Length: 325
Image (cartoon, rainbow, N blue to C red):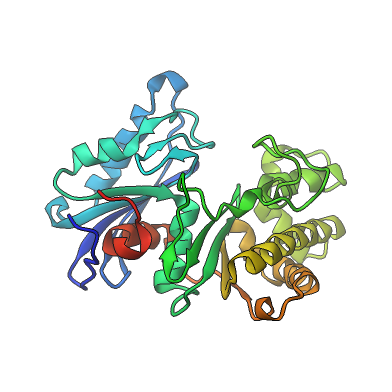
């Protein structure tokens, strides 16, 4: 199949969004509408399972869709990384049983005769927001996920920028602090090490937030809820995350001449508690005239963004999929 747009309202794409806690499958039409949407918890098999239980669960979930698989124009997938791209061999940090799992090849065997394309889930959010969300009608934007991790995807001159390994736009590992904290990637001072949900709640706990409770009772949602009730440590934590995001976005804006930054993910639901310190820091740190016009907005598509972005890999490969099939 050639790398040209297949968008018509009649087209149907099987879209898949794979995360550490949930599997989502859906049917998306050529206008980016999610016609069906099913979810299931991601199984937690032992490592020796080789990830087969997760793959079987995924196929079973697809089997519950009402759309005939013969009607699918292709299969688009967003999955947590890292991965070998474009081969689609995935090793999500939050899915221990998948290490080098040949997801694209296995899905191609399950759905022969149609293109199967696998990309990072944060990139799928960026693609979705550019195609049908907060970045519509813009040429240069960054889409971000701020949740368990911090990831991103970069659109320049209307096209997804993949980079040599498919990791371009990975703003979570932009350095925002000179000497702390240590990130899981091995570097020091990464945005993800400051602003991701687990790191932020861990920092708040170290400051005395919710003492005497289990880690499970200190989630990002709990932190946001407490901040809305005026808890001083929770407020300080969200301000800390907002400042770090503002620093990273200031650098990305100047580097890439961005018009819009769309932020999704669980922590973005904090609203002004996160966005106000972000905006204040961004405006302090952006000095060049061309960069001051950048707009930072919440992602518009909510939980459907992963499915919409995955479908766009199939619907618009000329914009969102660089490799040949």
